[in-house]
Length: 387
Image 1: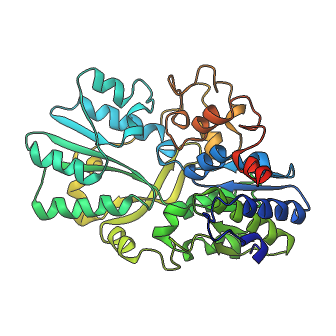
Image 2: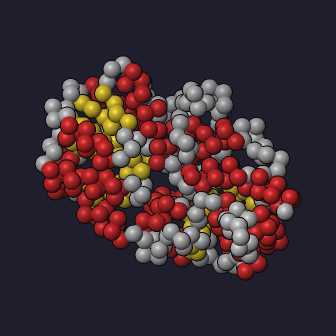
Image 3: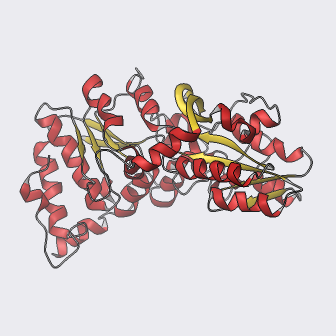
């Protein structure tokens, strides 16, 4: 763990933005790193925070950060996207989903393009809102495109229970929810990927707690740190992983105790267990991963869109030239994709990593298009110099 000096803060300032606290952490990282290390920040929100604060510009050259498959929109498989788009060809169908999903390119179109053609596509901010659409439009079949990790699955589960209680029979879900621990295990088993430590996602950990990740340190001897989203949260997590390597350790530490309890959110986990059962799931760029998804239990199968309409998912290839899958798997950085900032931009996205606000390609495009640090000095570094 980072030492007491690293956690020193000005009582009159925000400890997560105090400049001299950042200076202590940065200096400690430089003093303790003794060999090249690569850490993966799993969460897309961490990726954006790292770029926005300029953390990469403060780290020693021996330390590399690589983004992982922590963007739920990005990891949704091409066949899953096509399925949601093709459903709109059925009569009296409404598809409701979160904002970023609308612009993700399918093989031939996108939900946004189908909406412009007159198809009924609704942008919602919650599963409950999608259910309300079904309740108010009993003549239409309303399909909720459910994406997200353990963070959003409880809300989807609660909505299914409400739909059954209210006997709303024109509502169903395409469950593309994914589980985080199984994909982490696939990553550590990848012979082409060498990860020396994981910065674990804060939001997912609020639900899961600590135990779901312990296997990474115990079985695979890879240090892990659960982190919040302020720049200081992330710096402390990086320092923790560096310290673990310096001390020959491989354990799980939580540096986000103000939000993450060891046992997680038991009510949310119970809600997931009540409605869903683990199943194999397809991940863009990572293939099919056993027990990494959530499907509705048999008693709720009437709300399963695939079963209701007897749909079988296809396996189309990704868009030509798009390397979003390799980015999500940690094999390349967005700058290495031949389409990046050329044919693929936020205005003309080829792959989902350029669409989502949490996507690695979108973050690189906004903050690091030229391949150098976003600022010659990050704002954290400037605060240190001015202190």
